[in-house]
Length: 109
Image 1 (cartoon, rainbow, N blue to C red):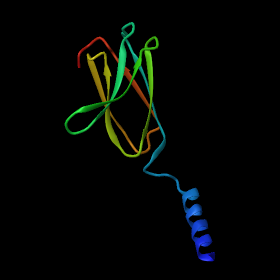
Image 2 (cartoon, rainbow, N blue to C red):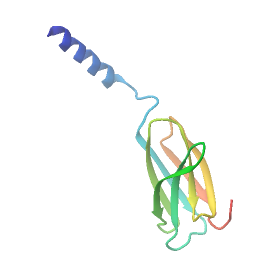
Image 3 (tube, rainbow, N blue to C red):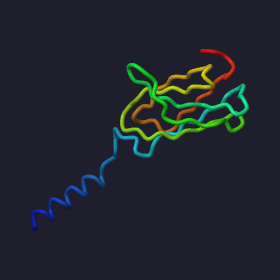
Image 4 (cartoon, rainbow, N blue to C red):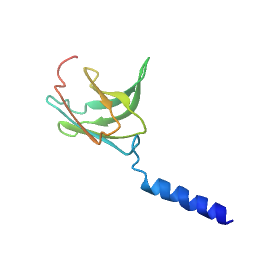
C-alpha cells in the first residue's frame, strides 16, 4: 500500500510541474479583420491535410472582424476561407497563443 501511495504522489508531482511543452492546452486565438466585408458573409476556419480542407468552424462577420479559438495538441496547417474568394493559409505552432490575420476580402487569391 505504501508503494502505491508513493507512486501516486510521484506521478501527481510530475504532472503538476510539467510545463505542457508541445501541447496547446489553452488553445490559440485567431483574430482577423477584412478590409471589404460583405454583409452576412461567413468566414470559415479549415484544417488542411494532405488531400483536403476540413471545416473546423465558421462565423459571420461582426463588422469587419472575426475571431476563432482552436484547441490543438500539435503543430498543424490551417487556412481562413473568406467568402470562398480569398484563402489565407497559416500554421499554428507549438508556442502560438494569438494569431492576427488581415485580408482584403474583395480579391480572389
